[in-house]
Image 1: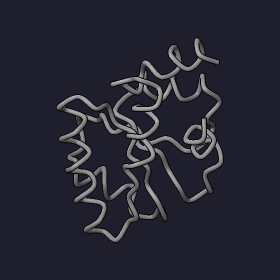
Image 2: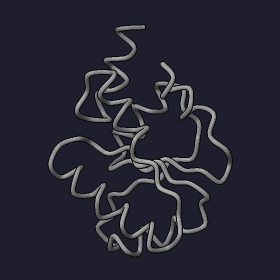
Image 3: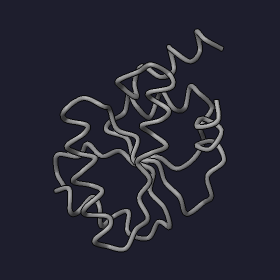
Image 4: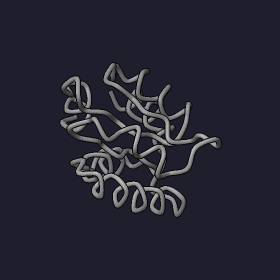
Length: 115
C-alpha cells in the first residue's frame, strides 16, 4: 500500500501525529519506525502541543475520522499552519479510506488480515 510505504520512509524532520498510544502501537505493528507524536496530553493545550511540533519540516496528521478526530485535525492544522509548518492531512485520510478503517487503532488488524 503506497500510503503505508510513504509513512515508513519519512525524513528525520517529518513527524506523524496520532491521537493516542493505541494508534502509535498500531503503526509500530505495521513496521512504521518514523517519529510519532502523541496528541493526547491532558497537561498541555493544543496550542502548546502544536508548538512542540514547530521545528518539524512536515507534519502528517493521522487522526481518526470520527467527529472528535475531524475536529482535532482542523484545530491542529490551523495551529500548525499559523507557525509555518507544512501539514499533510491527505496521506492519513487516504490510508484510512483505502484500508476501510475509521480509526488508526484498527489499521494494524485490518491490514495484517489483507496482507
